[in-house]
Length: 411
Image (cartoon, rainbow, N blue to C red; front, side, top):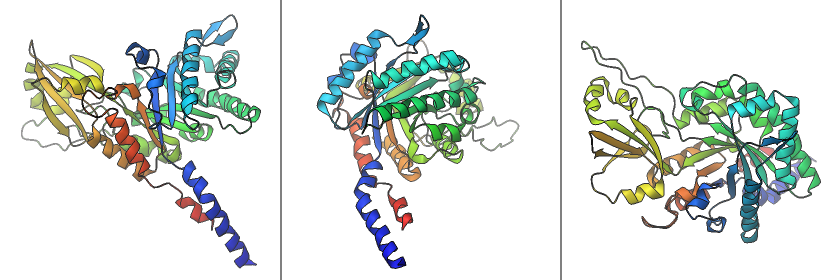
């Protein structure tokens, strides 16, 4: 009798393996910013669907009240419909995610009012039932708190309340559409100091299907999305040697925090910004700040700015750049001298830095990669191969074995 049951279990697992393998493939979610993409001539038809498993439409601003009902902007809805139609005409497998932007204050204030929350949920539900989105993402923006580690005090409670109502809406949409599995996503911070104060991780991850981790921020050090935290060197005064202090703000610190606080790794999608973060300094300040170590120099930028990778890679053709590898962040950066005593630095991604992020995804069994934005890549091939960074990510993700080992535990 026991032998028969064991054989039956083995057969069930063997039959299920192909489906489990498909279900455990790593995701490559490509975000599309509206109207920014259109402004540079990048239309929905340009999206390379052979690389992406999901397309995230980042074009819905926070809904506004019209009378007593919250509604999304009509032009944004039309833009989403154009993208959705184009994707569906070219692919039967790529799923489209409607991302709803909003500040922490907007989300929190809506959540504390039952009437406002109900109106928001109805509006969000229309994106599923009327516009036929495959998933909703709450792009719950933390603004300045993202850099400082501070948080809106109501975030932790408000988020769970919001997600519970939206989970019911998503489940209801699935019940009304047989064979469809619509999902609920939320963007999450990769700032380790903000996770515990703003998220009830266990509850949040129990309610959503995916968490897209926003890794692009401007911390201390030379890297804007560092794998490991860069230690801070304290000043050497009167011959005293003080050990470096780890701030603990690397990506690996964030993913570990999400996982140890109760989020299944497969629900975490690691964000990769195909942008460069630039900082400009007064060169003469470097001589002063270097007395206290390079970290103190990093804390005093005159100006910060962001450019797409496709713009930076063409700028590399200009003379005067010095290329440097940051060993803690495992990312490259470049520097050059500017007029009026300024020094400029850009932190960016290349295939080497992305390779380390793919290794982290494989080691921690995360759910995949979220590219922000697809059209920030070298889409025209001005610097070589078109979509070089996205193609590299897709190739490396496909090479990661499927996480189906858990199935063997059923035997």
